[in-house]
Length: 389
Image (cartoon, rainbow, N blue to C red; front, top):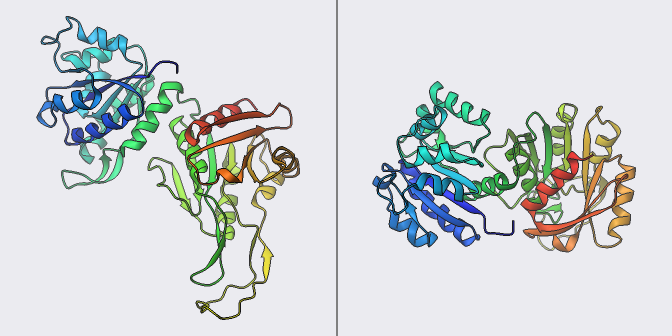
């Protein structure tokens, strides 16, 4: 976007309101323009001064005591995206049923662009059929809802209702400013990370991979509505809590088994993991002491991507990655053809582990597409390219 994205941050009266102070700070540092609505209940938990100081912008609480005579219209027109965080059961119910008795509810009604809800509340309040039905109504109208996390809540209950980590809220904001839930009904399997093959209980053969690209793809796919199964090995980041399924497999054989048991049910399979090509023929059961002579006899591991290519289901899309140090395009195209892929993403190994990358997206029928950016941005562009196959 040419201009700074405009976020109207709406804070409701829940104990998690204090966490949105940090959200506002992170958004400001990321270059967003922010204005804030605090409900009257929210002011029992946080102060307007917190948000004014952090965002260097205005904070609004009342329809009647504001310098703007029609704040709900001005704020609704100004915002590119409304983010309601934390969203209480009361605010969700008002929006679902068109009630408009305060600044937030009136602004919601007047806003014609995307709205992101971040529910956070007691587990029983969230699971109440009325709350779930109201969330369903908002989704049917095109609103976006970031599911709450599961864990220990402030009320000492444990379950679903926890305010999400703010980085996940920001990923959702980034996604919904530019994309919608256009993958609803798609089942996608993604692999990520570096497998490890045991030499002894301490040592292993592994690859250089942080898993960041695979995790970014799983995150973007899920935010766009896909049912995502992430099968991951060693990774350097937290797995998004809202994926439909996340299974850790440390070795090639474990990953092979988990993938093959699910592959036939998937619409897309995106193989982003750095899988070991070799493993010790026999792992030592005890730690090898320093100074002992070590000779490794290696054997090849199963070629998971080639196996998937041979056994693709009708209509299934298979996407691979190629990490190279030379002849990037040539080597990637060979892999595309030999493994019966629909698409391959080629990148230079010098970018392994970094937060950003420069990649080529290659297929048999289209010109190479070169893109660069942070890995979440790349994930969305890769998804857009898959949709065109």
